Image (cartoon, rainbow, N blue to C red; front, side, top):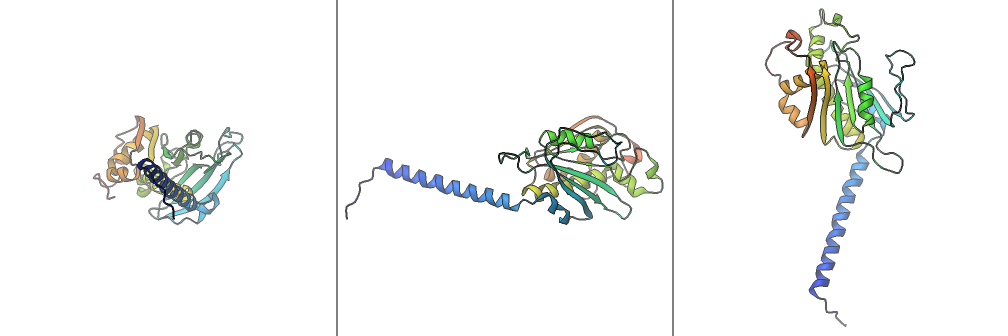
Length: 253
């Protein structure tokens, strides 16, 4: 048998080519596994999360959305395709926290991903009581997965608080925290992986909500908002019992 004399340059070239092939194979396998782990939008209604009932999961691709609680004709337009998820959270028997999580379509025309890999949670104004749909629309249009809540009651007033200390706690801080934890799980189920960066973007009551989350759950904030950031402007803070429902010290995480 005739043997070829291979120079050192040939050996190195073949070694590098083989190494590149192995690396490509590993990356392709990881990418395929991640894609396989993602879930269709409608299947998210069966997602089991603690004290959470997912009431709606629908693909919206028509570019227009009319908020269910808004006046007729006040549609939000020029929206990208996204998966709209609505859920009710009940961390206590008297809680009734509504949240929505909007997820940019996993793929758009041409097979490109429309999600930027980040979560932008949005806050409320005054006494909350409504889901902040315009802020959700702005975030999802910019490529973010986004989440918002009514903080556990309907109507932008304080009538809900009389005789309902748990609802006051939900408004004070718990609704936003529970929303954030649930949104992370929903995002991971839909895309096959969670957000790589997380942001809080709001002002007024929303600014206070961001500060409360950072103050009460600093360790969980670092875990769930790894390399995250907050945009909190003009926070409405120091509201007495609203900021300090129950015991004033940090809650267990």
